[in-house]
Length: 339
Ligand code: A3P
Image (cartoon, rainbow, N blue to C red; front, side, top):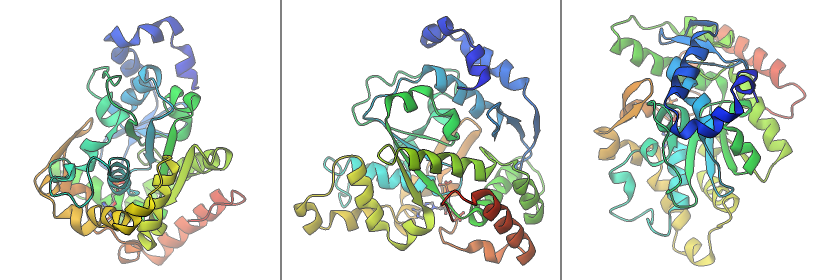
């Protein structure tokens, strides 16, 4: 529990669901934190657990921390932004709901809703708009998502032992994806695009959304090592190599593996195809849809750029790539983790 959380009166925690002033409390707390400019020219505040975020998502994450009540059956997707969140949300939703919504059904929900509508972020959506959402009526298993580091997950997520699916990605590809996304926000605000080298400098200094990247990945990696049955750890690159194996692992992890009949009917392959970059990118819900986030409305197309491994080589100089690799090796040394 963070020190700011500890200082929040316990009695007020109990009143949180009916206390609209809770947002004001955390808003003034976040305003008092040190901040610097991030990639998209927004202020990034430094949480007292050492990670950065723009204002509203950080406030939302603090409200979620004290207000969200987890159930053991909940499943939470966790990622650093631009690491494959949209993809893992699609795969998880399609796998969990495969009985009522077969992946090859013409009326699959993805025809109407993007993955970010199907599985919502705590800090960007559910707790983002000065509201305490009523999540009690949602049927099990409830699916949620977050970008916050492991140390700052809503406290009942850890205490209840609900399941967490984490996806990490090569930091260089993550950076390129983040850089491109930030430049879309800059264009919206009439700002010049940031050069990739400036973006890399900011990233290497740890000043990226929910970063430092390395701390984020290590936090969930260590949680996975300590509680492998609670925290699943995927790599974007391995998902690309063998998406079907990851769909099967998701199904086993949620305690509902594919049966022989499902395997014979090609249910796994249908989910892989449904959630593939090419298929999702062509859906009306993506081409014409938008997602309301705490940082503004985002066209769903912004979550689909190239969807490949190794695109960093088209953008980063060998020196910058080597700099990031050196930091990664040093940070992950002795952790058993390599990306
Ligand atoms: P690129 O920018 O490298 O193309 P997030 O969902 O965490 O915001 O991450 C976005 C990245 O995941 C983007 O990477 C995007 O193209 C890629 N992506 C989105 N949907 C995908 C899918 N179905 N399969 C593979 N990659 C996907």
